Length: 153
Image (cartoon, rainbow, N blue to C red):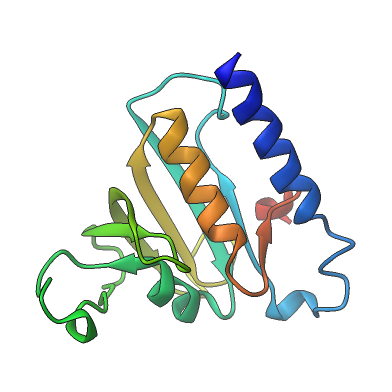
């Protein structure tokens, strides 16, 4: 019963982030995200959330923080190095509350899966972590769930 409510929450999230809502934003200014491993109904230890877009690094700056310098939030900005895993904290961009610890990998354009800047977040595979991370991404400006097959177009 509880999981049914959560799955309804994800379908509401998808409808709020429908492509019609973002039709006013040019595609080159949109950042897309999606679950790259399985789906939210399957159990797994790790889930990979893939993000791609031209303004990706500014969005990632609002979503990810390093765990160092906890007393001074101005020093919590995460520096991503190309093709190197970086341990970070995924946070809610609105409340700044931590969601999960993750590994972030940055693949700069044009040498990435999509040809644009790509960040992969390796988060815990629990349903709550996946749901909260996807919900946090949906609150970022010009960031929307990817359509089926959109990463490979």
